Length: 245
Ligand SMILES: *C/C=C(C)/C=C/C=C(C)/C=C/C1=C(C)CCCC1(C)C
View 1 (tube, rainbow, N blue to C red):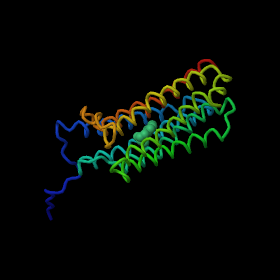
View 2: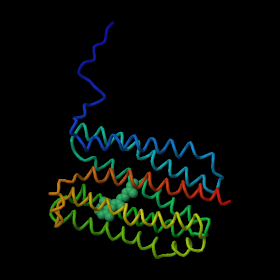
View 3: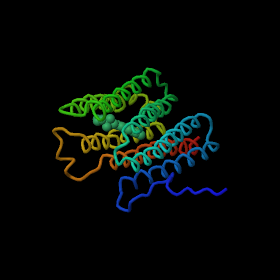
View 4: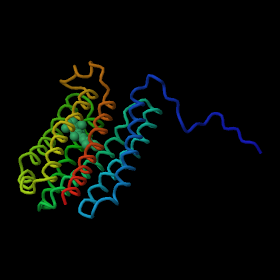
């Protein structure tokens, strides 16, 4: 018996000028590579840091799997994979809050700090989803984006000026350095996302979309910087702590 499979293909063609699809593809590879790096480096650290590195790897791994789906979705429908995007974020952003907490835990951080950050990040993402996928007309995107932005500012405030800052200063050394760098990631790196949102949804900020920026390209760049970058900050803190121990 011979089998002729001519019209069904599991891999779709990618046009050479499909730069959105390209960033999905590169994103999935980068996330896979980063996961391998974090997982394989685990054994070189002692248990105090191991959980943090493990969480870094889990974050990039979850993203890699979502990127495979998002790339396929984009190739199949030519539209933004909003649902997968937000599922990815809803899993990975709270895990980034866990990273934050784990670094400060040695300095005596309380669980309440973790829950505050997680709650604010969930509010930020759910309201962002409303604006991007549910209330997509009129002033919907702008209003929900604003509420999302307020939750984002709360996170920035909490880590830059709240109890987290005092704890990091008390701890000093590798913990303080890592905390400061992560604070910059949240202030500058995370600010990439509202730009993508404004490029992809209608609102008073419509001029941004005219610049020819694509929402998914901006989100993909943001993810690569933040997910892999966050993990590398934690990794180098663990390396420094080992050297100075
Ligand atoms: C790995 C994924 C990360 C770090 C995703 C972060 C996402 C944000 C900081 C999204 C923020 C948004 C706003 C501040 C307003 C507009 C809606 C969002 C959800 C794009």
